[in-house]
Length: 300
Image (cartoon, rainbow, N blue to C red; front, top):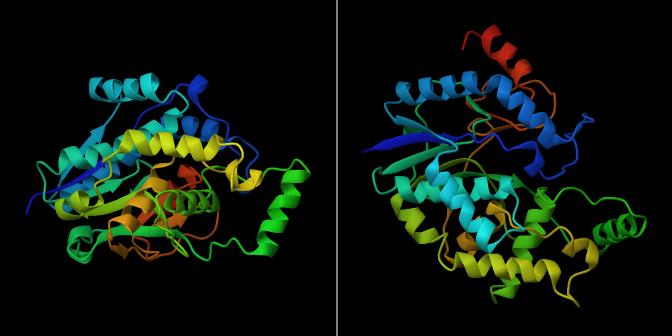
């Protein structure tokens, strides 16, 4: 059984960063903060990912701004120039899964802001034959009248309804895209692709990049069509997100998920105590120094 752990780090130039609201408790654009904090901590994060891969007898690969990425990037510049650099990178990480499956039986993808804090073998603890090992990013998404009325009121007052990267934005976008393809669904999970365990079989079944160019164009139509069946405050949240397409593909192609719990995907978005049983810590808020102190204090 051949296995690999991989990640990707590309330092996005500041002029290609799309404006994003701050993390909860911060005042700084989350992309500006991420750029600075990654530059100061990426070597340590990669070192810990490499150590983890070695401990579980898996290969490790860090992908970066090389010619393969530049060629991949150029396709978007030429065909879909409205898609942000952030989204290109997130599509690229899935593209790499499909390249790696030609050489490996099982794959563990980690965003570069994921810190392994365990010696337990991810592949031994998570049976990838059962489905894709991935986190459900949110629960209880809704479009009930009261909730929509609040969002409508915010929109009419000129207030933001949040980021196009928010779970609700991805959920509503996925629902709209399923309806567009005549695959209506009462609910659809919101996936977080920051940590993904997968094998060849499920990658083939997801068939992520089949009709990909057309899907991106369809998402653009949903975003821009006038008139739209969607209220403006919903339509403004639509975008071109890798997790939106992941959810739609898994729904249409009947791909099961082996949901990761809070230990195998500890979602660190606020400065709350870090659970002692955390195994893979996804440092969403990019407060790496705090997590590094915790890691060293616990002799991990």
